[in-house]
Image (cartoon, rainbow, N blue to C red; front, top):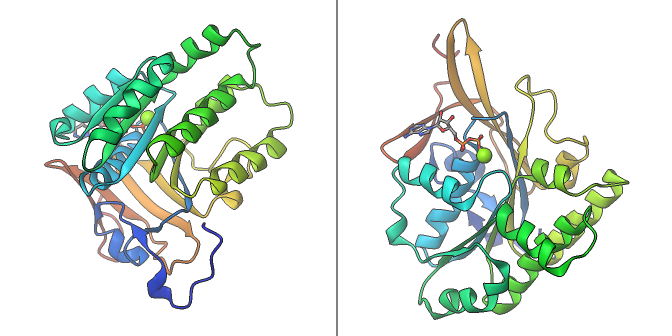
Length: 271
Ligand SMILES: Nc1ncnc2c1ncn2[C@@H]1O[C@H](COP(=O)(O)OP(=O)(O)O)[C@@H](O)[C@H]1O
Ligand SMILES: [Mg+2]
């Protein structure tokens, strides 16, 4: 979170999750300039929940950068169109080749309102090949550079890295815990609200690969696919949120008519 002392709790600006029923339980949203881990097993809608936040913030005039390392930009956008996100409503800037960064960023600057910038694994791979530097930790450097460049060129309010798990696979860390610590330092210095997607086992035994992510971040939102007999339902809980009085109960997560809803009756979930 931004290193600034506040005088009243109302001074904390918040970014909504745009999940109906959940924002009310976390004082309206996640604190601006904080880092939140969005973790869950495959198919628990981590990418969709993250995209949903950035999409709505862009509609309100913010600038977002989505770095998609697990799926290509078109696979991600096709999924979002299938979820009824109207992509024609936002200034969408796809950077599929990072050598075109300066040109593309003009489209971000020229738009009056917000912009949604997407870059993906293919673009980063191309960039690594183009500059012919040795592999391993270069992925991390390219990712860092894209964020820094966008921040400097056009400003960037929201950053989504999807996923941290893919970044680990791609960047051969030698001392992962130490390196992670510096990645978080880097993210904090940027002054933007960051959502990091983290793929976790279905049993929910941990929030990140190295067991340190949850204490390095400000917030943890956990998505779960829960199996009861043969029925699988989705659940969401805010495990932690610094500077926030949050309800840590588990809510059912539904997606209907293009909208996420967190449902809770204070009662056991229906089977
Ligand atoms: N139109 C839809 N309505 C509701 N759920 C959908 C729809 N289309 C896809 N899904 C669900 O979204 C899931 C994938 O979401 P995604 O955000 O990519 O998950 P994750 O990033 O956690 O792997 C699919 O497994 C599918 O169950
Ligand atoms: Mg995903």
